[in-house]
Image 1 (cartoon, rainbow, N blue to C red):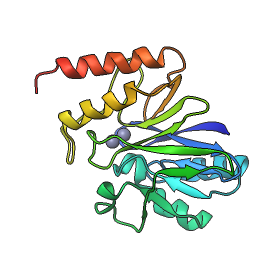
Image 2: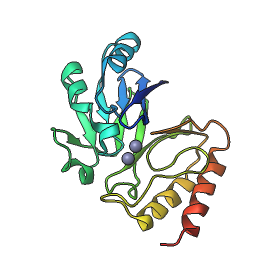
Image 3: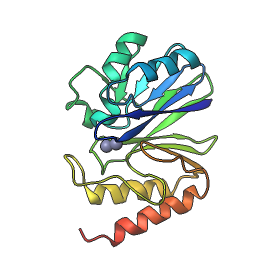
Image 4: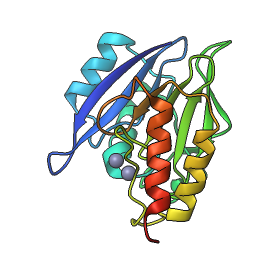
Length: 197
Ligand SMILES: [Zn+2]
Ligand SMILES: [Zn+2]
């Protein structure tokens, strides 16, 4: 599989990362806020089609444009069931994996804390993690004070990530973590544990 990062400008000048996975079954991870011309032209240029759109969670900067893209590319939208009910458009419950081809797939790892239905996607073969708003570069992590968020859940989720063999992290915002992915997770974990609840 080949990963293409597309940066979407959402609201208040915020930028959200969208990832287009070029594979037998092309998959889009998150859709951005409105999924405007830039995103569509990137998809058209690279794969020209989508098999599925997978949302890491239900926040509008990640999920807002999903319906429009699902109509355009005639593909389903998948999200964890705990984040499904707050969406304003139809989507399907995600299972345990997203098939990218006959022998390639992403594992779905529930990582509540930022939202109750937040997920990460893991490619065990290449040790790649798509982390949504659970974990970012520089040892940063998603806020847990929004609706459905929980510090205790986030600690548990990051504890789960610590056990995985991860070499690259593709987060929902900011830079991709190419080096020291494990240290990055450790740093986030320690900072989170040290915070007053
Ligand atoms: Zn979020
Ligand atoms: Zn976000």
